[in-house]
Image (tube, rainbow, N blue to C red; front, side, top):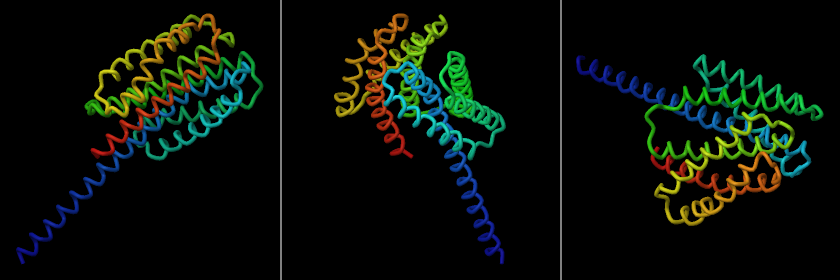
Length: 264
């Protein structure tokens, strides 16, 4: 009888432990979803504005229209994904504010271009960015492994490129505020710092030869183009340069994500 009770107790403990582990795994999975989609919104906040101004400046219209359509679809998808799993009140509030900003953005995008609407696009995309930054601050664990740090940094590089390109084309549309110029240059500086870290990282030859070498050779001339924001003479080169480097960065993102998945 006593043995039966012991077996029953052992069974309850095992089941309880399994339930706790499952709960922890679900929590981690939810956090991964929040981080992934928040990073996505952060990039979209800059890419959407960039594509909007390119369309309304009559430059790279077809490509920018495709990009804008993709931005809107991905923004909606990411906001919905976070809304589905978010449990913390502060994150729920922030993602609701992001949803409000996204709805306002779509309303403005349906209207004819005006300087006022252009200013609103900049304001609402910056509010999306701010919401994303705070959500990430509360979601990314303090102690993360080196591979995850690299992944987050590389994803951030994609955001920095879009941010620099956004301010470049916005300047040519008449948004010549000194703060905008400073923000573009800060984005360029931060990208350069991250690129140096990437150069030091031990990638396999297939990545270092095909991706890193291309980025390091391409960046010196590209950064001088971005820094020419006050002249705004090279909008097409900026658009193509951004897309070109994004392709290389996407390969780095895929590599780091694959390494992380291997160790899960």
